[in-house]
Image: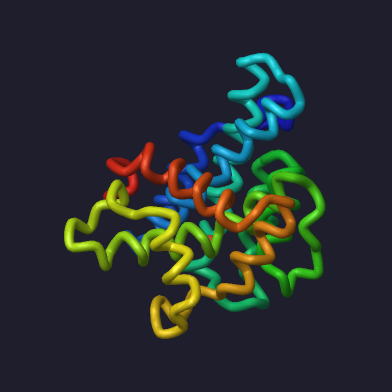
Length: 200
Ligand SMILES: [Fe+2]
C-alpha cells in the first residue's frame, strides 16, 4: 500500500482482528473508529471538502481509530505499544499522518497531539470506553438509551468505571476546542449510529 492509496478501513479492521483475540479490545477499536470517523467528517465540512474528499478523510480518521491499539494484545508494555505497531504499519506503507496520531494517543510516546486527527483520536479513546461502560449498566444494555446528561453525571461519579481517566476525556474536549457536552454528544451519536456493529 502506498501513501497515495490513503487508508482502507477494510484492511485496517482485518489487521485489528488478526492481531487481537480479545473481543472487547476489537470492539474498543471499532467504537473509537466510529468516533474518530465522525470527527473526520466534521473536519472535512469545516475545510469545505467535496463528498469524495470528505469520505477519504473520514476513512483515514476511521483507520486511526481501528489501528490505534491493534498491537496492544501482543505488545502491551509501554516499551512496545504503540511503537511495534507503528513500525509494522510504516513498513506496510500506511499514511504518516495516521502513524503520528497513533503515537500521539500514548502520552508517554513523547509525540504530542498536534493535528486535528491526533486530537480526535486522543479525545475519542477514553470517551468511547466510558460510553460503553455507561451502556452496559443500562437495563436494556442498549446505547440508544444513553443520554448526554446521564454521561455527564457519571463522569462525576468516581466509583463508576474507575479505570477510565476523566482527565483524558476533559483534555480531549479541550484539545478539540469544544465543550465537553458537545464532545460527548458527538461520540455518543457516532456510536449510536453504529450500535449493531458495536454490539451495543
Ligand atoms: Fe484505545
